[in-house]
Image 1 (cartoon, rainbow, N blue to C red):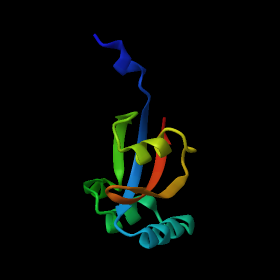
Image 2 (image 1 turned 120 degrees about the vertical axis):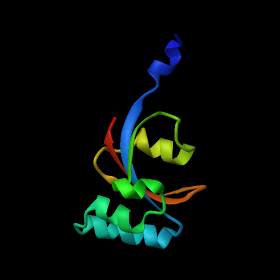
Image 3 (image 1 turned 90 degrees about the vertical axis):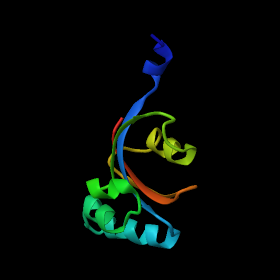
Image 4 (image 1 turned 45 degrees about the vertical axis):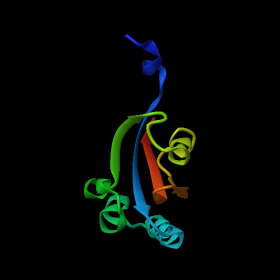
Length: 98
């Protein structure tokens, strides 16, 4: 078997994806004020993961686009990070496990 693949880190995260940076910041403010991340994701996120409250499950390092990957594998756990701009739009990201 190829051992190199096993050495790649894994993480579990959820996110909210929107097209507009201003909206992304407004949603981050709502969550900071006490609104539930999963409920905000279900209402606003344009990603199919919105049906699961933004949950992306567990994935390996470098499985996501570079900007997203950098946040997930370096930022603090259980904090809402963003807006993070990628080719898909603007993300709020919460890393739940690494």
